[in-house]
Length: 194
Image 1 (cartoon, one colour):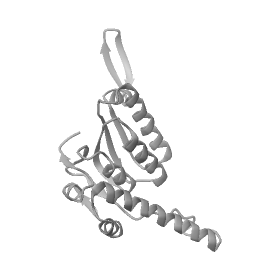
Image 2 (cartoon, rainbow, N blue to C red; image 1 turned 90 degrees about the vertical axis):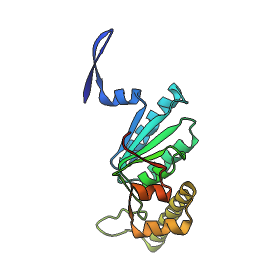
Image 3 (cartoon, rainbow, N blue to C red; image 1 turned 135 degrees about the vertical axis):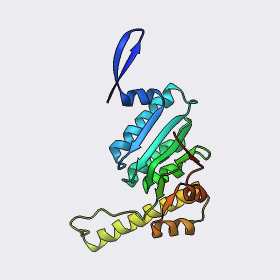
Image 4 (spheres, rainbow, N blue to C red; image 1 turned 45 degrees about the vertical axis):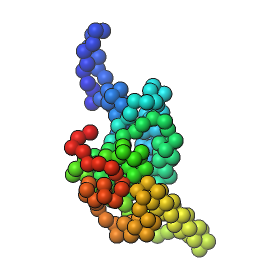
């Protein structure tokens, strides 16, 4: 979408995404992939280089996605000086919920009709089967369990909840409303708008 903007130099046509980036607003929508995580990372790095004190608003509406890509973004955000206000704007599920919970305490928000959900780490299979010899299948399973332990550790640290509570939340596939998400410690406050 193009936005027409009048200035002293005349009329300009700018992409909406550029206008929002200039307002320090970044969007992570849809499935989290390496490509979408890299795009958000590039935008964060750019805004940090412009001004590392002025907060950025990261608006998330995602069913989750690739754990590796999400963890890369999680690690980078934890290491930045840039203050990031994170907003759940409709749904933060799985890796998106981990990103929301991993934000700086006091800067994690949820719109009042939004939801949060955390499932077990999902396995991608081919034709309904996991293919490989017994040892490779065992290694894949161990890797999946290790990834799930990492997610549980991060959520426990970021929410202040015990590992057993996180494991129960994951295994029960609970869809939390905004109030439940705040009470659980995934976010800090319910807001009416971004």
